[in-house]
Structure formats: structure tokens, C-alpha cells
Image (cartoon, rainbow, N blue to C red; front, side, top):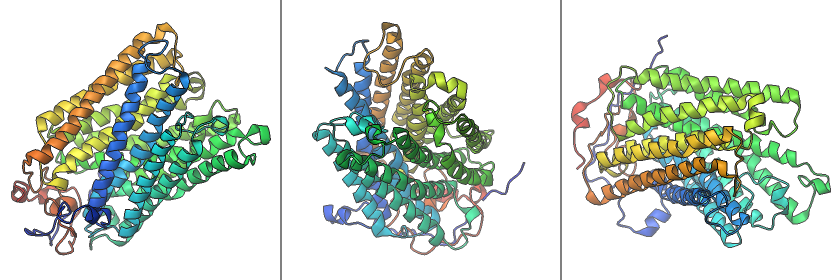
Length: 553
């Protein structure tokens, strides 16, 4: 099957030596605190979500060290263990995975790809970031006020009874939800209103398509989460009997509300990752994307179907048998547009001129990790199998292959890909490749043993376990240590590049989308003149190799 594949030819481009770059710190702290520049806001998101990621990773490592021994190694009681694994989940999901790609790379790259000077609503963009900061501060405050031990899902009725800072973390999630909604609204308006002349829908880069589909989910699904955590807070404070069975409430109703948001939230997390991979497999294989329109429409299909599958999280909750059949079928059905993307990426790489640089290595690692996560998801979508695997380490491993493995690897790939554009400096390629190898090996060493012990019945969230599972937990903990070393090497690699100041090329990888046709780093308003798009996207016959090899001034 052949598809018409989009390409871009830009007639006007900023070259501006002497132009003011967004990295200019001469005006100090307040010029950043009050900035409306999408690139600076993206950089602040990058720092904030990066700190949240490192904190969440530290909590995960503490959990794994505790499980080195069957009777527990670190924490004096099970409450402390519950608090630490809850912090790991809450920080990773709400402070890192959901906002990281849209907030940092999305803010940085989306207006550049559209040929715009900024997002449509710059002040709302800055407000979104400060709402994220407020949510992060409230999450930290919840720790100071005694912590919370409900798990990141805050399931009722336990979240109604436990003597922990549930209201504070609920308020944090509520505020973070508004940050997500405002970012999504901003991106939708930007895509509709600020595309460069000639940049039609089917000339847009697929990262833009992915962010657009994500934004729809953010705007439509996130209010449900906000309402749900508010109801939990009202239930705890005023005992009004919505989820509390002692007052005639229904705790299963909480599950329906929570997962009605949280399954679309899975795609709020993963769709931007899909967009990054779509860009990278094309650029680093030097080939037009196979099935451009199929990939674009599959993002919208995933966004729509994701609202209909929340019940597969509740196969053991006692819901109707017919409802379970429907949710199981829809779970298999959503795999179709997802598989379209995976096969299209592989077809793009096939016989391409592949550059095995750090961004491409992370991309190839993503293709492997996401395939495993997707296939194990199909296993869990099967009713008879899920009954046995529900709430075991098999679910933990599957969740991490999709969430941490796939999304984090795509985020790392995108960060390596756009780092030279963002800062005008190049990191150490050898060190970056070593970090990628450590992360890939460490991740698989962490979670493959969890698939095995989960299939043998090891429940998740237990602070102690029977000795027969100890070899698997020890192997998983060693894998987590390797993974932690890999992340540390990657962070060092990025930070070192800022001090070493090795100049990047103007177009480091030979991209042909508008983001690579601005100066490096981009000036304050991105383009000296508005670009005009006359060709399709991903056509490497239009690549200016001379400009590609010009170093940053």
C-alpha cells in the first residue's frame, strides 16, 4: 500500500546572528519567572519534571532495596513501605509521566514545527507551569504532613479511613489537573490558529498530531479526575456518603470514576511518546514515514477508543459479565491502531539509512520495550487470564513496560534528539550510548523477573513475601541498581555538555521539519519572517546538506 507522505520547503528562514536567544540569562531570575516564551517555559518544565523523575526513581530504588529480603530490609513497619511506594507512583504519574513530554518537549517544539512565534495563549502557558509547581509543592507538603499510603490510585474506602494527608495530595492532583487541561487547551488553539501558510493538516509533523490527540484527552478526561478527588475530599471532611459503604456509598463507583479518567490518561502519557518516535524513526533512518495518514488517524482513534475501555481495570470488581465481555473486546480493539503505529515504524526503519546515534538507539529500545508492553497488555485483556494475574507483579511489570519503559525511553530519545537544537551544544555521543545500554539492560533485568514471579502468584504491594520469591526480587533489585546507574550517567552526560560547550551543528541530524530550519538555538520569536510551506513533510530530497553541516556560531 502506498500513501502520500507529507514534506516541507521553507522560503523564509531566520539566520539571525546577533538575535536574542531564549537562553540569554542576562536579565536574571525575574526574566525567567515572568517569561512568556514557550521555549523558556519548556525548559522550566524540563527541570521540574526531571527533578520529580529523579525523586520518584529514588523512591522506587528504596522499595526494591526493602524487598531484597523476604521480611523486609529497610522500613520498620508496613506503613512506611506503603508510603514510599505510594510516593513513587504519585510522583512518577502525576508529576513526571503526564506533564513531561507535553510540558517540556511539546512546549519547546510545537510552535517551531508549526512555524509560529509562540503558543496561542502564552500567559495561560505560564499559568499552566505555575499550577504544576503548586501541585508539586502540595505533594511535598503532603509528605511533611505525615505522608499518604493509599497507592497512587487513592482507592476508596481505604482513602476515606486512613489517617494520612489524603486531602492534601488530593488537592495537589486537582491543581495538577488544571495544569494539564490548560496545556491541552493551549495546544489545540495553537494547532488550529497558528499554522504557517501552506501547513495543511496532512503536512503537519506527526509529533504535532500526537500532541493534538493528547490535548483532546487532556481537556475531556481530566475534569473527571478533578471531580473524583474533590468528592473524596468532601467525603473525608463532611461524610456525605458517596463512596463510603458505611453511609450507603459505593466504593466501586470510585473505581469507575477514577479509571474513566485514568485509562485515557495512559494515552495522555503514551501518545506524545508515539509522536516522538514517529519523528525519530524518519529522521534517523533518512526515510519518509511509512503510512503517514494511518499513523495520524490512529492517534485520533486511540484517543476516542481510550474512553471506552476503563472497565478492564475492574474485571475482579463484580461488574456485569456482559460489561466485562464488552471491555475485553474493546481492549483488544484498541490494540489495532496501536499496532498500526508499531508496524509503520518498523517499516520505516526497514532498509533505511540508519544512523545508530544515541537518539536512534533509544528509539530502537522503545520499539522492543513497547512491543513487550503491548503484547502483555493483550494477555491481561483476556478475561480468564486476568482473573489469575490481577494484582500480581505481572501487572506491575506490564504497567512499567508501557509507562516507564516506553514513555521514558521515548522522552529520553526526544531529549537527545532536540538537545542540540535547544542549547546549541552537543553531548558526548559515546557516554550517551553507554547510558542507553545501561538503561535498557537495567530496565529488562528489573521487570522480566517480575513477569515470572507475577505469573507464579506473587501479589503486588506486599512489604514481605514467602522465601521462594527471593531470587526474583533480588534479580529485580540488581536490575533497578543498573537502571539507576544508567540514568545517572545520562544526566551527567547532559549536564557536562552545558559546561564543555562543544558546538552543535545548525541542523544536527538533518531534519526537514520547520523546527530544524530555525537558527540553533532558536531566537526569541523563532522566525525572522513567517515561513511558507509549499511541499510535503519528511521529504529528504529537499535537505540542505550545507546548512546541516554548519556549526552553531
